[in-house]
Length: 285
Image 1 (tube, rainbow, N blue to C red):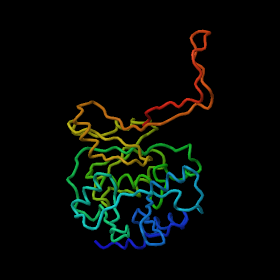
Image 2: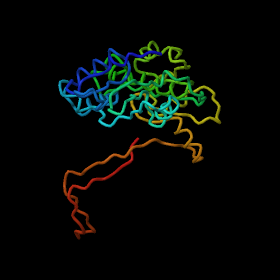
Image 3: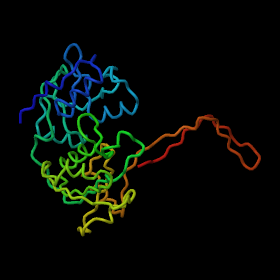
Image 4: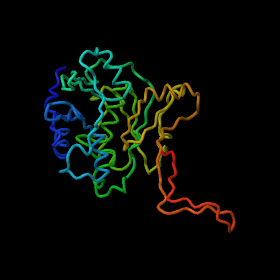
């Protein structure tokens, strides 16, 4: 498959707005940032744009503010098999191939490789929420269909799952469910099967699991929020779950929360310690 990756190249002094335009028009899900010597200095993907928007980066600011300055790359002498392993290791969909001067020679895309071994485990994508906190953006479309870069959040998740070998997907729907049905259909456009779990009323996180038809209980069920982009290697996650022999495996990340004041630790009326603006760490999902 010939891919015109040159259209996804931008100079380092380009703006965030220009990068988003490239993501939207070229549809390669990556922007390649080069300096005056045409050396690769960074990449931008949908996830980088999302983090920039969350951080209130202005659209006319430099791409340097949101680009990944240490992207995964492959040297020109690396074999295609090794490049595939590299993409699997880092759970990425594309990797720039560079020469000894870090000039781009090619870009390898996961979709150009033969399909991986199918994974029969069912996957539920939770997409029934109303998205009240993002209103009015969610007035006419469900939150998972909001675009990050050039495609809906949920489409990026579906593509990630399909590329990993998952083919048995269920999408729970409630608010504006017809929008999801019209966009994804039966999943054949991605080479997978998609069925819909229709909630008569909001069932909350995980509630749609009760709507599943009979499935093979020997296969662990994967439940994913349909409005969260995450770099998770779901194939590895399944392997980890099996190795641990647990009933449930939850994906979490560490979140720091700093108290904006000095905290007084007391025992009765006695002051034991004064800690200035302590930071507490939590695992969140």
